[in-house]
Amino acid sequence: MALLAVSVIAPVMASATRTAVSGSATLSVTDIGDVRITKSGIMHQVAAQASGPVTGAALSGQMQIELNANFNMNTGEGVAFGTFVITDSQGTFEGVFRVQDTGFIYFKGALVGHGTAVYEGMMLRLQFEGIDLYRGGYTGPDGLNMTYTGFVLSPKGV
View 1 (cartoon, rainbow, N blue to C red):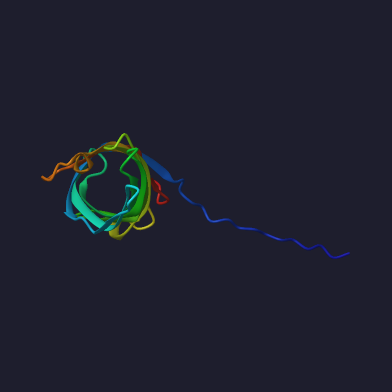
View 2 (view 1 turned 90 degrees about the vertical axis):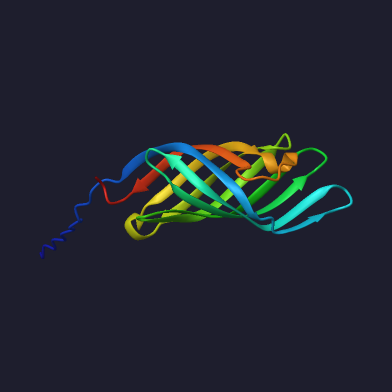
């Protein structure tokens, strides 16, 4: 009788590190994109852009977004989605976000992104909420204000 021995060797891996993040962002519109309003009061906005600082103890830098939105100007409800890049001197987090608009100027949403450069292999997940003063007729800078909480997940371990 032959004896067959199979050896499985698993690499030793450091456990992933989850770092909590929280802070705020204040963005200014840099391009309103293409806007079309239907006869029934539905606004369709494509490729709007905004940028501004992100501040927080574990996540800070400059954020740029590109947004597409459908907004009911009669009810103040809407949805939006788009892409984002948060940049600092070490690298970026890049990804996608989604937003739910309520009460004409209020919003909440989530984003998920991946890191580049020093942040390569890391994932960013945030929940955020805020106020969009531009929907209230404001035309100056810093019209998108939000707070966020979430985490950065790093497979590199500590």
